[in-house]
Length: 118
Image (cartoon, rainbow, N blue to C red):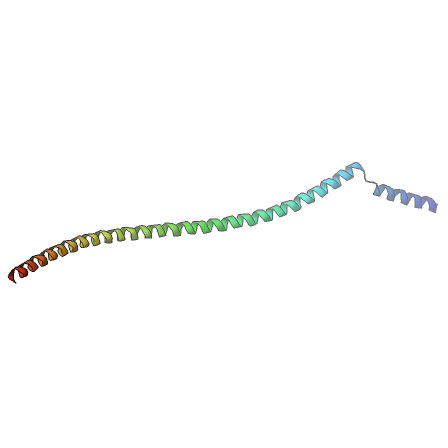
């Protein structure tokens, strides 16, 4: 009787170790699901890091664009101011050139008069 019980126990253990096709399919699907979930978590982490980097870059570029536009406006104002200064200085230069020419003509005339007197 003891032999029958031991043989029955070994038979049950052998059947438990022997995997039926449905059990094998279920095990493969379970393994695949775990693998897909693990890969999904990794991909989500990479995506989150990339999205954060994109947001930081967007903020930085937006700031740089605003700063650049402000600098452009400042430089345009400076250019207009300096252009006006150049115009006024050119006018002043023409006036002084005319004055110098007049003074040179007066000097030449005065020198000629002195030479005639001597």
